[in-house]
Length: 239
Image 1 (cartoon, rainbow, N blue to C red):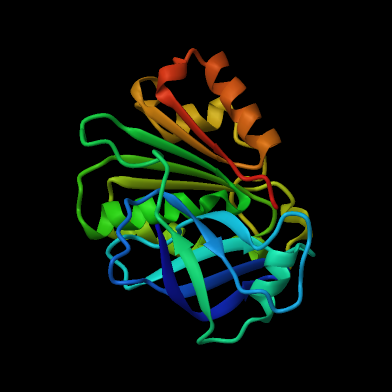
Image 2: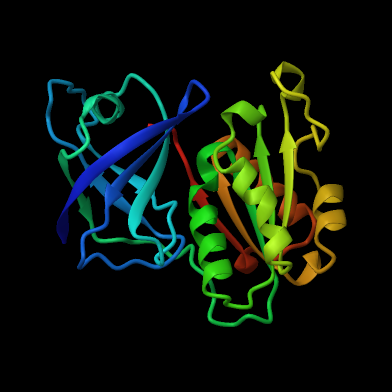
């Protein structure tokens, strides 16, 4: 099903990451962690991929608007998203995806995010916090530099008000950052997982990021003897 939604505005994070926000249609219902296809109007940009693309919903179902995150590029859709004015009607399709919170709260969850792959995890974590679901969540978030890291400050502050969420952030190109970074600088590795999540052996793992990163993380977890049934993965191809 397709819903009309009004574009509310955009915000840049650094030079390459864009948030765009739309008014959530009244009939549009989704679960935290899901994605939907977005269709933008033709304002003169076209390519072979067209103007319809899937985006993870970064907002919680409890929030008023729909929030999406993307890395800018020369694609027709992203050039359109950079050019449309607030008030423009776009379309969102019915949500899909099973990267959602389990009904049970006694199994720990480990989220592994790369770059803009943080989007569904922001939805999941905000919902878990705001609805007080009781899930124990450990987020491992890998980015390059703080200036290009969406939701960085928000994620770092969440454990202060909701102790059942732990957040471990690493910046793999911290030496290029404008501001000092005192946290981790290595890629996510088994030692980081084991030190950051004491119940790592029994956790369910969710991985979202670019294919090389996500596939590498899956192989790492399999090397840690995590059963495939406890690994969920969603790829961000960049579009």
